[in-house]
Amino acid sequence: MADEYDVIIVGSGAGGGTLAHRLAPSGRRVLILERGDWLPREIENWDATAVFVDNRYVSADTWYDGDGKPFQPQIHYYVGGATKFYGAALYRLRERDFGELRHHGGVSPAWPIGYDELEPYYTQAEDLYQVHGVRGEDPTEPPASGPYPHPPVSHEPRIQQLADDFARVGLHPFHAPSGIMLDETHPETSACIRCATCDGFPCLVHAKSDADVIAVRPALRHDNVTLVRNAAVRRLETDPSGRTVTTVVADVAGSEQRFTGSVVVVAAGAANSAKLLLASANDRHPNGLANGSDQVGRNYMFHNSRAFLAVSTEKNDTRFQKTLGVNDYYFGDADFAYPMGNVQMVGKSSAPMYRGEKPALARLAPMMALDEVAEHAVDFWLSVEDLPDPDNRVTLRPGGDIALDYTPNNREPLEQLYRRVTGHLSHLGLHPHHLIPRDVYMKNDVPVAGCAHQAGTVRFGTDAATSVLDRDCKAHELDNLYVVDTSIFPSIGAVNPALTAMANALRVGDHLLARFA
Image (cartoon, one colour):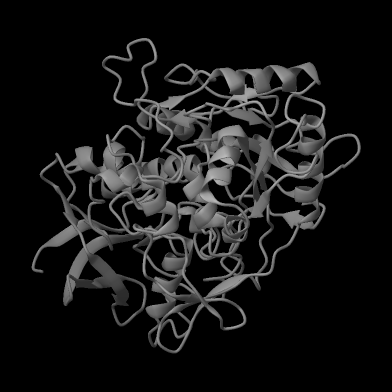
């Protein structure tokens, strides 16, 4: 391709798409290279069997674990990246998450920037992604310079009852921050129809605040922004000094194309961003681009998470269930002095999801029984911080495929949080006459293939010996290479990482605009 761009962005998700949106009004020539295509709008978007059993939208990639065993990562390549399928839970990291924190399993390191520096961009990101919420309910909520731009998404009756029950036992339930285009005061004109197919599904009516709808499509209204789809970037080439990326080499619809730009920004997700840098090794960067510190690919994180169901004879007819959060145990309690994590609802389950996610259960019960379980289930998601470990890492196999070696750590806080939550449920309205044995909760720990919250691998910091990027997310060893996805995280906290990636992309966008000024 003959054109030269001011900025080439590899990836169009929470980081890359948001950055493109920030740069679009500047007039600078921006190219977005997206490995996937537009996600097709089709009835299967809302079909649980197609999404969870047939894996209709999951990439055909094969990765390999630490034992060399192949697996299919639950990863999606479309315009908008992982946000096309996320639950749009848009949390800020807690203020203390930006400092060094001692956990049961070790220490999570401090970030090179403080919460105060990112706070204005959190506010801007909440506005851009139309986040619904209310300040003051969450006891761990960090300071904010303004209210949420939209009112909280209301609880449906069964979830309101649960919120009331939690409050009655001394907890502080809050309305979860949600990025959906819902107007409950004018439902007749609301883009969001508050369906049961949001968390884990693509939105057929484009009413989820994903990076495609919110950021990329508006950016493309500017003539200076170009999107090339089906462009799998294979490597970055540098000048002889190794200080400047000169060429982005991609397979576009099966043929090699080469792109040049003044600045190159990688935002392909923690695993694939590391893969690209490692695959771009040259004489000046023999261990991978920007990898003089040997940190590229290391410190992969993706949360200690557990999804579980609580079941009783009382039906749960909630449709949009992801409205409730509890953070009372985020930093521990009187009986456990270490951080535990976040409690939130997960999207309402259905029988086909059990067949897709819990095949052992499916073999034990006919579809009628699974339907009955789904009708009576309340679905929870626990998220606990896993700690950066240099041996949890992405490397490349001889053929160039991703090898992901990951050993779980800091697991005790997840067990502590699970016991506290289920202990409360046993004293609320969820224990009588279980459809499954009393006080037994079907639970599903998220395996390494479930990489929705992946982070780390290209961490930023002030010391070039222990980080890949500087505080502006520019590679220490190159003058024009940046990274803006969750791979830059030194630690992951215990809440969903998307909003932090969006806020940081806006921050880096302002840095780039100043660089070009």
